[in-house]
Length: 553
Image 1 (cartoon, rainbow, N blue to C red):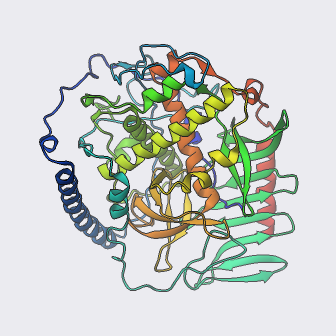
Image 2: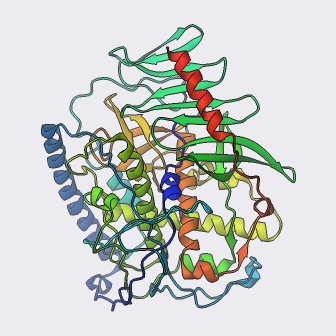
Image 3: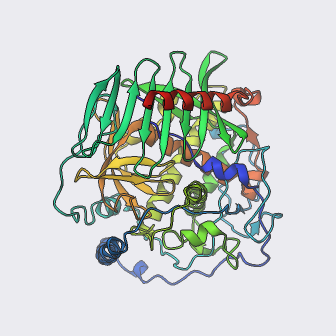
């Protein structure tokens, strides 16, 4: 089964915002290196000191999170939604050499020095921009950092990540029950007390209070889901392998199979405020679960990818635009996310880029619901989480570099090799930014959710049935969202969509740098003449909404 929450909500922000920024003269410069006393210690002493610092920081965060949780309970906090468009903020890092268009090992230019000296020109300074419907690129609107983080001086990210993931994992009150497994809604267990029954040929899952959670109609392949936030989504998988996704909250799309030179693709057309955008994916079936793996339409020569994974000798200051006049989305999430003020690697910069773009998309979706914001985020994004995200960005960039070499040699990248399944089998820690609203169940059997811009850590390979993975919530926005360190089960194709979201946003981040603008591009054959957006997508979505309404009535 394909779950109902697979849509990359970031495109909602893309439809309304251009990719231009206000220039900031003299605000980005190289910062002198700070003396680091740990460099005088032995590696063992450094690791021990780092461990003690992380444990102390973890204890402090645990206490703060518990206090915030108690305050939210007293205030009856609800989930964050809000009300305005933010603006796009794209950043450039210059590359002094033009990569060759031949992406092969023999063309390994020396990695270019990491530099944050230039910004894009254009745009305006008040957080608003005109719609850019010609390209469906990602938008990111980060703002000034108020807590600059110090990167650890060793590469022990995986053990640290494991410790973070289990902080305060059992802080919940006595469990009210256990999640209820489901075969019909694979990879999506129900809350404690939920039941499934057959009604008029449909499978209906109801909560303990009798309210309807999910409906599956095998006659037309339709799944209907009622979210914990009051939203309603519809997913229809058809025999011809096309799909329609409609939702009362967020993006909607129609997907059709597409074959090019004997290779299969899935072509999605997104409908956003009457405008159309489209993306390409490579389908891949794993143990009965069909995944759509992001298919990049633009690659670079090897030295571009080398540059992204280089480290500067000293931290470099970087000021994100709109610091003096923050757009609405950033003010809304200020307690949850703060970008850094300096970076030592492009991957760390890209991690903030992905987070900011995701939160902008989440804000635009939440604003439509018109609900009040919670008093504060109970599980904000910590420096440790950012470090893990930067590491994950580096792995995604490395995977793209492998694909780039294959494309340069006229080989089609294998969807299986690029999928999240393959990635999760490398025994490393993997952290993903959530791509869309997902309803989950915590260990006590209570419903909770994650939304775009939250962060989860996947702690298992796909389960034996191939439908789900185990994960831990690393950062969430509060209210009805899952608490930090909640252990949850996430459908495998939802995790695939998280990987897709990160790959897509990282691609745009690289393209928006001066290095990306100057680099020679490698275009896959299928992207040279892709199919146009499906002009009938809006009517197909409306038709399925009517069918679903009739089915539930």
